Length: 327
Image (cartoon, rainbow, N blue to C red; front, side, top):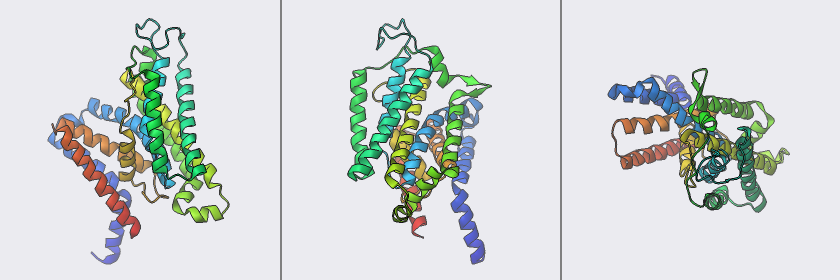
């Protein structure tokens, strides 16, 4: 194979290798355990992936700007608790707000989007106003939000949710699970935002070359605040859907989801150095993690060994990313 052919093969693998990895992963596990490839199991993987994909899309937008968000999981947990507390049955014995009337389904959507957007905006304001590194700022916010969730719930689980609310996470529309429909809609919106809007171009520009972006007259601070606010709104929606899927919520919901989201984005080709990343790659990264997790459970692999395998994958993905961008 000559040098030109080798370079072409390397480019193809670099751009499409992640999709080949997912395909080989599915086939390999399916050959070992045919039950993995059953329709109910595949749909279950997609349902679980739907919530995580929404979170990863928010985190991905921030990573593209050279930022990070360690508060995403805790925001999901807080908004899950808020949504659940507003959607309890009137006759539930341990209702959080005993005198709260039955609310229309739109109300928890409004509440979680408002809370998520506000916290995301605060992240952006803290980072841009005080010039605090995103890692530190969002680490502090992660702790604050967990404290708020614990105070809000009094560290008690929230149950007794209405069936119409639970149906958002467990039901189907035209034989397609609702969670997949929600995730599909968000995927399209974020793809359109990043690929077809001025804000999307600014997000890539900030991550690619902040100095040139500033010189060109783009308001970097305002763009970052909007990006963190959008991500916060996505976390809020994910929290609502998580509560609907599981039929309850606690202050510990979505713990460590932020690290899974960052890992999925990195595996999916979102560069740790900023300016690079595609929606399709992020979704593929999420699916790889969920396929791997589900497959390892079906294969009977120890949960502790599963964590080691995931950790190795993350390190290899980041090493490959840094090598690729250095080249």
